[in-house]
Image (cartoon, rainbow, N blue to C red; front, side, top):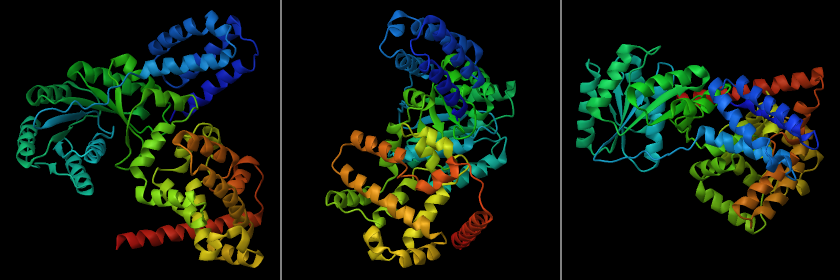
Length: 494
């Protein structure tokens, strides 16, 4: 998401950067490129006009044109205007009373039922006791889907297959929540393929009779301006407290996320960033603006790491680093921890300066490359993992490569990358978080943290045609990976 907008904005700012001294004339040329980037991203036309008016007033002012680095000043202004456009956002759920009620509504296909499960999981992580309420009586599959999600998460689900009145069902669910000691009821209400009077009447009735503490609209970011239009219609009928935007991990242009607050006055509170039930994040306008401008989002990355990393294991590794110890076994465990944060391309996009390398990788399967690295490490003896550069000679390299299904030169590349990274990791052991992130940025830009390292950069950077032998080797590796996946699937099915 936002890839096209990010690329176009970068091009516009780069064009200005190449002008040398900025004047009012070439500044206006650059601003027209910014405007085109926003329109191509499907941002609402009235929103773009207001945004550009505010931006132009500041950008062509004397303070910018006479600044020592006017382009940086302009980037800062664009950043601030993007933050103002999408915010501010209050992430508090404003829970109160014996049982708080959160009502989710939206059109069919927006991901509303799955979002109920994600929200329930998020509340469970905060120490709450949520209950999922299957109030979508229009689509029987929604009830079954919510029950399956409840089983996966270990959450109670209130459902009644014989119910005909969603209002009576919601009232009964709230009574059940009070009786069972549940403190939050999440209502999964009915949706439609489009907005109609019957749908709005039903939702308005539930809103009046139940009196939910918060009403959230779930919208699909992939629908572009339709998402903004539906948000406006729902807000007029229900007075929404917030929007949950789903499928932000897709290839949507991003206009809905930039427009919804300005058009409806309702902030985006949460965003869905994947299919897994833990892929629900608080929406931070400042962080999103940073991603759009290619500045990364280190804060979200650190928060996710704190939630998903094994703290005990991280403390052990930290203690070993302080002693100057870092082996390939430690590296393997670090890779395992990093996988918990999601696809590597997504992680790289959140590190300042790494977005461009993530784009360069294109269709290269970084996670597959990571599995190959693990395979190489697993083919080594304990002694080889401790001192790879000192112990691994030519014969050992051939043996390791055969065991991992790779070429000997790939083993050699891994050892070289590991030496660079081991030195950096030892230097990082006594640093604070900010200095660590700066060191990580240096490391990734050097290529030492890329799963395929030099090999991956050769694949994505040279554009050379592969030889028949190389194609055959890659085919063999793909077939090996497919067999491994099928074996894992059979094991998981038992």
